Image 1 (cartoon, rainbow, N blue to C red):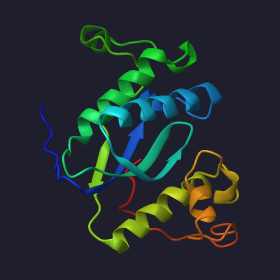
Image 2 (image 1 turned 60 degrees about the vertical axis):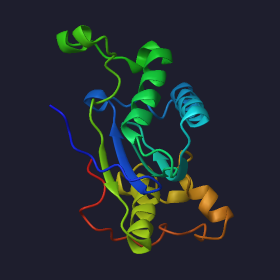
Image 3 (image 1 turned 120 degrees about the vertical axis):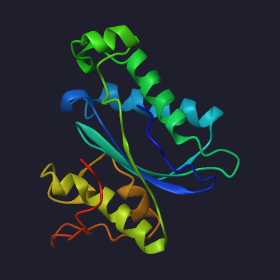
Length: 180
């Protein structure tokens, strides 16, 4: 089955990717380093800007802005997932199903991902807040500043958030964001 995706050059997209069977592998230092390396390698040949990101144990959310000359984000994700899967330690890999074996795939990532094209500045701000508050939402930490694998720290350094944002008050986010 072919999924129809809007591919707009220069557009900004919110993405959710989930590990295969929600295995909790992405908080391991080895996995984080490998994921960073995969992003870096793909960005070298197929540029995009990462506007915001959070990596949780079993999924990640991020916002990318694509260049005007290329809007093929499915190809970029395929390359990132493939690079990660080829090089990841055995603890990241699940037992492969017959379908995985036939397709030559590792059982590391769910095959599909969710994307949403950002419509305007308000939509962008809501999705950035969602990304940065997600570790609190999943009860992994008390405050966004306590989660290491997040662009929240860059946003604080740039004066966009106060360091205690999301620490004392529950942030109410729209329920349509971030299919998990």
